[in-house]
Every structure is written in structure tokens, then in C-alpha cells.
Length: 396
Image 1: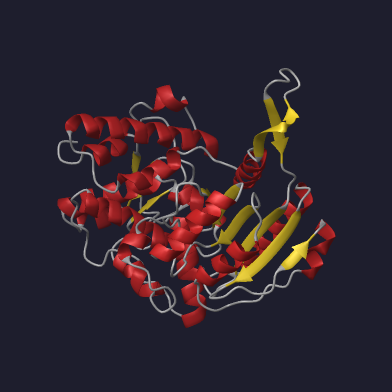
Image 2: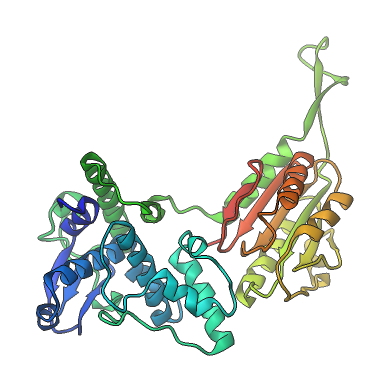
């Protein structure tokens, strides 16, 4: 609590159980850290404190519960270890020899994704998981787990018990709690830890990742619909050609009809089949929801043939081709030439676009935003820098 008040506060909300049911250390899907007493006695007190901090962060980030949603638990455990160890390193902890780091994750994906460490640090465990899974499938590699702890995400051990944890009676009552209860428990714990560390003047760097669990769960599809509707609703101008009904001496409003919705769908090599299927489903939903002509441009390093969808049934004409690198400049050039004033633009991508930070590409994105009624960037993983008028939505 004196040297690392943020981590210390989180540990105060953990229940610690000594058991031989785990070889080293592990966490469940609730608030319990399991420690093998014989193994704990074989490492130094300093290393044991680092292990406890590591496991507390797994619990706070709900990694045990989140691991249930993925197919390969070992790979998810590997990237989750990299996430928490990065936070520990930022907070001044000395990691155990052989611990998983962002360098470990980068070494696993470097054959397929040449991303910098600072780019990886911004990604969630789920986004890192997808990158590693894609790389493993292509190069038949296996990630090396933490040399000391091994696989420590064990939601099968139980959901944790609120009794005996400081503050747990007030927050949760007693007994075993459902997933939503533990989500609320750890949101409260992170908030309290933040206040404690801030008052002590020792707020660790890189703490933003923990606040992912504080964000309300947003239905990204609803957010996309809302962004499109809001943008279309703004397409009105004042004109004396249509005087105001209430005040004939004043101009009225003329609303433009919905012209086109342009969808730029990323089909580069970094986009998985699952993501491509998500994109296709969303294109169908947009065509079904809006009374507008939907124009789809598949792209990787270049734009491919435009498919026009005038009704949902036209989705059968859509052909997904691509598979190369990821550069968007030539696709944006094509869009700028062909789009009309007040069209809406949606980009569906994994966010890993090689030329997105170039000044000329940023200028084109800004120009499209000024011309369009709505500009929406939907990403499954990376969130690059975009002009302010672009709405960014994470597809989760």
C-alpha cells in the first residue's frame, strides 16, 4: 500500500486461498487468488508480491471470465499475461525472469504483423488474441507461457466468495455472485484504487487499460445505426424557396433525400474470415435498415469493383476479393471522385492500415468528412488517429 497503492488497493479486494489444486498460482472468475503454498515458499518474498500483483490485475480486468469466450485458452492466457505484466512494469515492478511481455507477443506475431510495441500496448487482450491466433495458424508457432506461473486463468475453479474480503459485504453481500455482480465489484474496486493512488500521488503510468472495464457495454450495431441516422438528419439547409410555416417571412428548412451509403470494406490479408463474415452481415443489415442505395467497395492496397445494393436481396451480388496488404489511399481517391455531397461513408476494417498516418491520407479523410453527412470508422481491433469529424466505433 505504501509503494504501490493502486495495486495494493486491488489486492485488498481479493480473497487468497492456499491450495495444492494449482501448481503455482491462479485466479477464478470472481475475486479469488489461488496459491500453492509449497511453490510460494520456493520463491522470494519480492517475487511473490509481484505474483500477487499479477493475479490481482487478472481479476480486476476480468480475464478469467473473459477467457470463456475464446477457443484457445492457452493463447488468451499468454496475451493476458502480457497485458498485466506491461501494467506492472509501468508501475515499477521487476518482473520474474521468463515473464510474458509485449516483446514476447511481438516476437510471436512479427512474421505476419510488423507492429511496434507502443501500438500493441493500446490493444485489448481480445485484439492481441486475434493477432496471435492469425500468426500461429500461418506459421504453426506456439506461444511460450510464463516460465514461472504457467496458465493461471482458471474460471473453472469457481466464481470466488465475497466473505472475508474487505468491503465485500457492503458491495456484494455474501455468497457466490453472477458475472454482472463481479463486473460491478471490480468497477468499484478500480475506482477506489484510482482514488487511493491519486491521493498518494502514485498513480501508475499506463493505467488507462484498466478503465476498459469501467466503460459501459455498448451495442456497436446500435451505435453505428445512431451515427448514420444522426448524420443523415443533419442534411438540411435554410432556404427562402420553402418559407417557414410558422413564420412565412423567415426561411424554412429543406432536407436532402438520402442519396448513397458508401461502405469501404477492408479485405486485406490481416482481416480474418470471421471478421469478413461480420462485415458482410453488417452490410446486409445496413441495406435492410436504410432506405438508401448502398455502394460497397472492397479494398486492400487498391479498390475493387463497386457493388451497388438497392435492396437487401442484392447482397448476393456482393463479391469479396482481396487478401493483399493494407493501404487505403487509392480507395479514398476513388471515393472522393464518385461520392456525392451529403453521402454517408462507413469504413469496415481491423484498423491495421499501413498508410493511415500519412499526411495526404489524413487530408483526404478530412475532405471526405466535410463532404459527407456521416463518416464512420468501424474497427475490430486497432484504433488509428483520425480527423475529429470521424466517428470511431469498436466492433466487439
